[in-house]
Amino acid sequence: MINLSILSNFKTDVCSINAKIKYICDKQNITYQKIADGMIASLADGASSAKRFLNCAEPNGIELDFIKVYLGMEYMPFTENDVKSFHELLYTYRDAMLNGRINDAENLRERAKVIKDFPFEPKLTLMYYIFETLEQTIQPSEKNTSAFLPAILEDYKPLLYELNDAECNYHFARVNGYIKFTQGFLELASENYKHALEISKANRDFAKDDFTLHYNRALCFSRLDQPYLAIESITSAYKDFKGERNGLIHLHADCILALNYIRINEMQEAKDLLEQILVQSVALGNEDITGDAYMWLGVLNRRSGKYYDSINYHTRASRYINYDSMTYLENLFQLCRSTLASGDIAAFRDLMIENESLFTRNPTYNILFTALDFAAKIKTEGIGDCIKAIEYIEKTAIPHLLKISNSFETIDLCTTLIKHYKETNNAVKTLEIYETINNINDKMFYRNVSALVRGF
Image 1 (cartoon, rainbow, N blue to C red):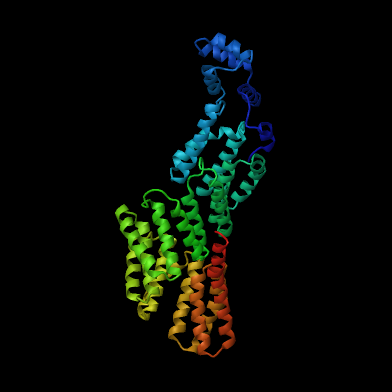
Image 2 (cartoon, one colour):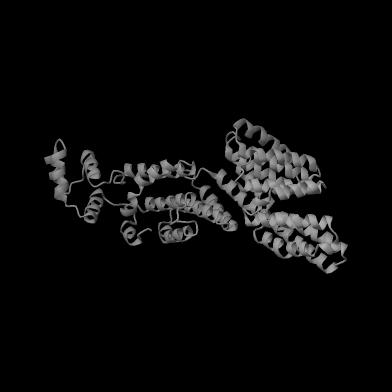
């Protein structure tokens, strides 16, 4: 944690070299005479350097290098040039984390952590803590799980407000957004990313990665089933983007864009984009994105009524997607849906039995597969045999899916219920379910359009 009482001594970010040396010596219980004796024994002109040091003269370069090594402060930002180097070190540390170079990140953190105990530059200290929290989010330990990270960030806020530094505010918003996203607080994550974007517009010297922020917001909106805002975020990302549209993040962004085109029935736009993604991902040898593209082509074809094409795409996708991933479960679920929609009930039953052990991997998918199985029973069995199925869909599946903002699957299940209640002449329940669908549509479409009109 940041020791705010210590930092209050260095609020101005200005502290002389001698003041820093004195502070460290006092904290480590090292006398000036010991350092002077070391100079005499180690430096070519050691006696002269020791005399200067004992008289509290500003140390020259050779003397300062010796003092830093003697005190174990090789990476301490003593001088203005040191501050610049330390600033670069912090960004190198952050980039190593974000690029998955875990060992490099750990080594860089060890070099940088001296700022925790000797916080002469409050801004650098705060940046270190923010980046360290980011590392703990990416690589959580038993001690620092994601549940504790928001509390850690809260400890930084007094200093954040006191410094009122745009660079610190920018990184705080980004990391806080990332933490909220990993915890499933998608609206809060989106707000933090939006705040970081607002800061970045006026601070291009340190905030140059708008594309990732727009992409992160799009991911939030997509998972909240708000397709128009997701599309707007990706198109905003490309609006100011300069360069080739061929990086991995661009392929991921295009997948998000294509998925949300499907959701608003812009099928040709989605198809063209997914076929383009396939060409690029195969060329790059990226099986994850190739699998995603085949999966969404499967969804597109099912929604277009081409069930056998859809089944073929989902079957292809399964060859590329990691068996242990949530994406594999999503693709399997969509394959089951397409098989059921094709009318091949026997093949649907075989798929469900064959993969039953996979359903329990994740509570949400367990509910989705169970609800799909019940939906099949409603479709194939007599009305009198559907009571249990209707009850499960209405009282278990739909409330859970609404809670996690899985709007599109909720609407599909509502459609199944409406068909059943119409057949049983239950007008009250039919209207009730229609109301649920209307509320979902208001959230996904009407509210999104309003947000766009307000100037998003």
